[in-house]
Length: 372
Ligand SMILES: NC(=O)c1ccc[n+]([C@@H]2O[C@H](COP(=O)([O-])OP(=O)(O)OC[C@H]3O[C@@H](n4cnc5c(N)ncnc54)[C@H](OP(=O)(O)O)[C@@H]3O)[C@@H](O)[C@H]2O)c1
Image 1 (cartoon, rainbow, N blue to C red):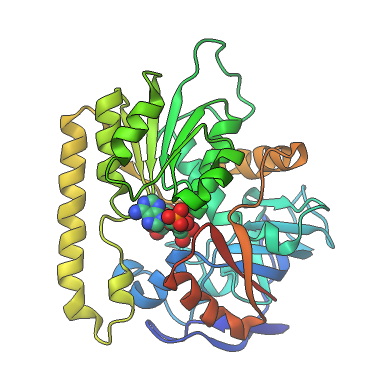
Image 2: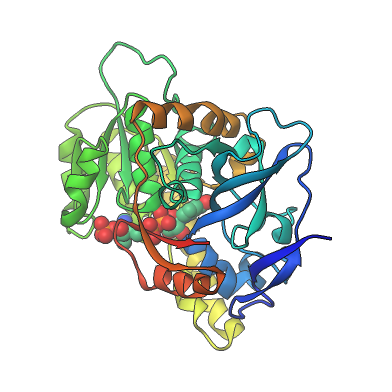
């Protein structure tokens, strides 16, 4: 049986360890990829630190990670869009409920990707640049386009000739936010967003027509002023405090839909704790009460608020449209840039644990990447 090296989570809350695992054979709808670059998302260190309570279905040993770029080395019998030797990037969904975290996790030399969540890497994009996209753009697309969230038209859908409408993206300088700004702009919406002042120009370059500092006490009023009476089709809430701020903006502008991507209290405070369970109760109580309070606030204002799950596009029609049509077309047209810019922090699987710690320590408009 062929084998390869993987950075595994050997047990809940343990440090990643590099070991050897069996190399899988791709299923009919999968490609087997030699991974060349992976990117880190907050969920990776959240799962590492809290999976006993947050990802209770996840068995260990597990391979974490969602963002993969590499080269196809084998294809399943039903795969039509890829060939062996092709460079691809895609969303690894191994940590989702019902998936196999050893076959389908990103942080290993070889992994499987489903064809429907994979796209070719254009020649002018490096593996490190391609690796920044998968979970960021998938989560952004779920928030903007899934009917139960904002339900907006996708890039390439016909746009009405009438007056333009606005999408609010709180947290535009996050990884999800930078992809959301580009997708919403490409779909023909005006985008108003938030970022710290040093990232404002970058956000304008991605298509935002107004950028407000999320740390400013007048951020909500500034966004409402920037919208200036245009119709608002909805808001995407990213980052601490974003849900209530978005409810305030929507209530003052007549917007009725809210996609919530972040918990009201960061799980960061749980990750480093020596004993998880005593610390867990107050944090989860605050998350539960905060979510209930925000949902009721939204409902009283006529706003439909729902949570985003960034890999849920695996099972709907939007996933294959995003990865099969929209992403390749936007890249070819130069309408989609790999943002946040990759910050390569190391080479090899042994560097992945440090990369998780680096992401957890905080980034500003940067995507932590490891080359394999
Ligand atoms: N539900 C899902 O499926 C899903 C999937 C992916 C991510 N998420 C969540 O979405 C959020 C963003 O994740 P990410 O990976 O995109 O983040 P990230 O790239 O790690 O975000 C870093 C950025 O956050 C910005 N930021 C810090 N505090 C903020 C605040 N209070 N409001 C708005 N922005 C703030 C900073 O912007 P400045 O430097 O400009 O200040 C920084 O550039 C996280 O809460 C993450 O857990 C959810």
